[in-house]
Image (cartoon, rainbow, N blue to C red; front, side):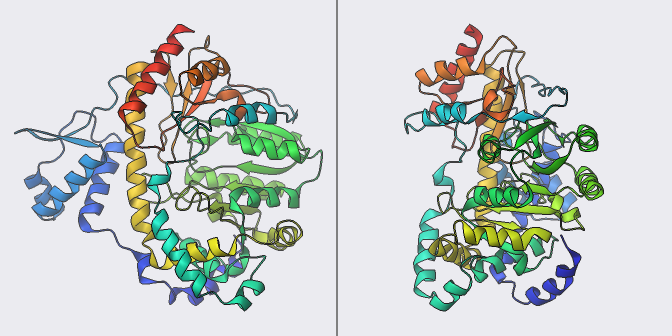
Length: 493
């Protein structure tokens, strides 16, 4: 991010912070978050007793009522369980240790991308609403405040100024961009409203960014495995992929990236630094800082796909690579589709030094994102309790992740490896090498279960014994039965 925007913007916007944007957590929610962090970090292990109500009240300086409310919340989230006359214990979700996947390095090569037919064949087969949606790219619609958003839209459209609509058509609603800028500022990243361009979902923003900095035949560094939509964009634009391995917990392999950038004329990078799809990996702040420095050294732009940034399980939101960019090389793309409004198709990009050509290209292509949808989201961000909704959503996703991990441990073969992301709603599984994920996909679909097979996440059709599962839907007896069925199919292959 360019410093010249930062301080001045913070001063201009600070007084405008709506009170509800600072929606403070109640004391019991903060205390529950502290206990949850101890569980995630392993300080409190599965089966271990958590501090008694009396001990916690005395140690943490909170009332017994606050402790009880916190423990009830942790029970609802599936993190602890009460035992009669014994107290509260960390829930033993996973009865056996689940090893982490191993992502092997491969020799440097540039690849013509040709995955669309495979992707379309997978996606078209999981549209049936009666199919268990483990292969979906979306969380359950019932997790989002759609009725409240509808009221925001009705209110905002009635109050809409036609002149402002025309003036802000291409960069997007000033009210919405101001709300987005406020969230950047609250997260410690002050930037100018003028750096933001609103798009038709994050995918349009990502497309615009890539087209601004590349031309047909150029090399683009992408992740391996990578989100299949990124591969399809490269295929459409006739770009060549340079695959960079992703560690299932730590993200992009910077050593490999540095070596490839030294030897190959890479024109751009497209990475997800937080809760990467499909692995769920997140880079540490140190790695993000090192990546920003590497990009600056080679003057290579980064298209940062950060659509899952709000879906973190820890106490603090993760920073993007954009936070460590001092030269405007990072184009940070976000969206409300994953966190608030699926179907509204409202995303944005903080374009850094590329902001002006991004806006011009948008003017020449789609002209404008949906004006009513922008108005609805701007109104909701100001008045609707976005942070309260996000806490509820994060708690639901974390609980559903625990349930799916436990089901993997119960039903899948011993050799199965699986990620354990700290946010988002995907698990990546590495199955025994004899399992063909595409064959598994067909057999599971015949049983009414969808999944996303590994080869659709690679320009070179790698990861044939891997798959991605979605835990973004409420866990039910049907979900458990589907996992048991998957386990039986896998064992039969």
